[in-house]
Each structure stands twice: as C-alpha cells, then as structure tokens.
Image (cartoon, rainbow, N blue to C red; front, side, top):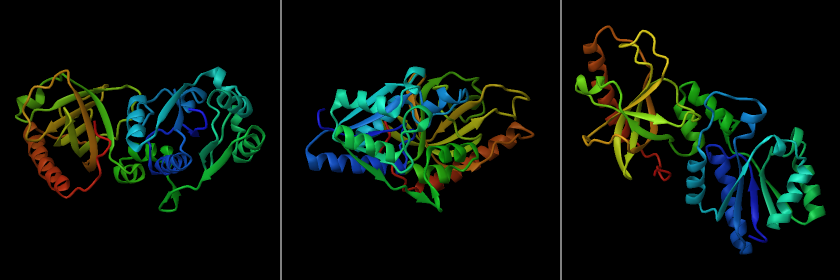
Length: 305
C-alpha cells in the first residue's frame, strides 16, 4: 500500500457526492500506478460524539464495503472509532496514518474536518501535507436544487417520506437488507402473502407507508409492494414497526433467507381501514400502481446483492 492515494470519511450512504470523491481517487491513483484506499469509521463518529441512539445508518459496514468495492476501490480500511480516537488531534491522526501507509495524496470533500474539535480543516491538512510529504486535493460539492448533497439531508428526506430526494442524491435506490422471519400470517390469511423482514436495528428505515420496490432473493430481482408501519387496521397499539414485502410472481418459501429491498417510489402513506375488505381493495390498487411504476422505472440497481 506504500504510496497510495487515500480519502478519509464516514461515507454513509455512498451518495453522489461521495462517488465523485471516489471516482477522482481511483482516477488519480491509476495515473500514478498506486493503490486507492478508502479510510472510514465504525461506529459513525456522530453516534459516539452526539450519543445518538435512534436508527441512523444509511449503509451497514458490509453494505459500504460492497458498494465501494463495486466502484473500484483497491482497499477499504475501517477504523474502530472510540473516545481515544475522538481525542486525537488532526496532526496525531495523520502522522500515525502516514507512518503506516506512507500515502502520497489525500482527497477530501470541500468541508472536511478531522481530529479533536474538528480543527483539521483543509488549510491545516495542507500544512501537514507540506510538512510530512503528501498532496491534498479538495473536491468541490455536488448540489441538488442549490443544496449540497449530504448524508444528513438524505436521512431527513427518508424520515419525511421524500424518497425521490433521497434516491436522487444517492444515485441509486435506498435499500435495506435482512432476514425473512415469521409474522402473524395475516397476509396469507387474506390471500396476499407477505415476507416479514428483520433488519439491523441501527439501519434507518424509510417513513411509514407503502412503496413500489424491488426484492432481491438469491440474486434474482422481483417486483414488490412493501408496507412499512404499525398495521393500524389490525392493531390499536403496536410498538414494533414491521417491514412486509408482497413479492409479485413469487410463491417459494423463503423463511430464514436473506432479502434486499430497494425502494423505488412511495405510493401512499399508512392508513387505518374500517374493514379488512377495504384494506384488500387498497392493496390490489397498490399492486396495480406498483406494477405501473416499476414497468417505467429506469433506476440503476448496480448495488444489489
């Protein structure tokens, strides 16, 4: 890894802004015939510093590694972020990193900051680079509707039912992956079977509602209608949010298997129906609407399992 070009960041979601940095990193490293390395952190520094307990991550460490590898990065180094790391100055962190990697160039975002109290800004990094012996390239931001693309904006969009903004900033459909588990069997009982998904508890789930989606099972893609929420038609109070996928043109038993859901479009919000018949009628409409949405969809799905 000696002489590598590197970038440092959380890279949660691997959105279009991240992808711009990664592309520049790979291009520069190839020109210099050196490795390209992404250095990232887990847990996310914000979780430790701000003591966040709610689901937060747009990508799990495994998802992040998979996407970065597909983009063409040579190596991914994940630093275990803890209080000791958080107290390091930018100088100490960079010095330690350079001793181990002997990297020759650092690429960062326009607003990147590193080290205790985030004092390691671009000017500071350039000073350290001149002193230690590496170049620093700052990548200008990508914007959408005059707003810089960022993971925080994407999180807010997902929480506020704005899937279009989230997917546009990501450059790919937002996805969740988990294990198919047994539910209460209500879907099968009313003739519309669903697969219930158990996902990583720290993964950010889109706002409650019904979505036109793709379900990936054994590397095969199927159209699906996904319901996220608390099933108010059947339960007055349900503390546990559920993720249920009605996979179209599919009838195999998949309990215990892995499934990835990619969210293409939000069809409607969750609502309580007066009767099961009313719910069934709406679900049939949801299926019809999802088929139409997915038939016209041209969203890239290169990150699928």
